[in-house]
Length: 160
Figure (cartoon, one colour):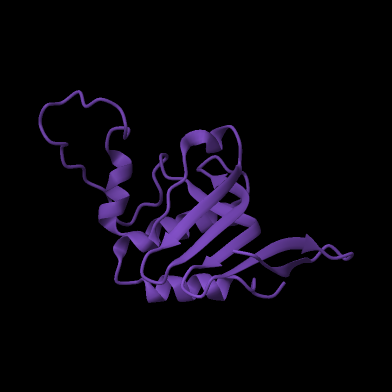
C-alpha cells in the first residue's frame, strides 16, 4: 500500500501551524474502552484547515499478545520526553486530589520500558474529510479494499 493521499495535506498543515503548540495535539475520550471507533476533529488555526478522521483505534497495552505491537509501544515510550513519561506515575487525572500539597516528585529509571499505565493508540483511518476554509475547498478520502485485499483510497471533491 502506498502513502495515503491525505497524509501530505496533514503533514503540510502540521508544518504550517508548527509555531502553535496546540496544533500538534488532539484528544480522545475514555469511551475507547467500550467502542474502538473514533472521529478526530482537528482544526489548524493558522492555515484554516480542518481534518475529520474516522477510523478504528487499536489500544496496545502491556498485556498485548502481539510482540510487534509491544515493540511499537516501547518505541513510542522512549520517543516521548522524560517529563511526559513521569506523568504516567502520578495519580489518576480527573479524580479529586487527596493531598493538599502539590503533587510529589516521582523518579523514573530512563532505561526501563513502558509502565503499566502507558498505552499506545494506533488509528487505522477509514475516512478523512478535509476542509480548507481559506480557499473554500473540501475533499473526502475513503478507504476501500481491492479484490486482492489491498487497501486503497478514493478521493471525492464535495461542496464545502
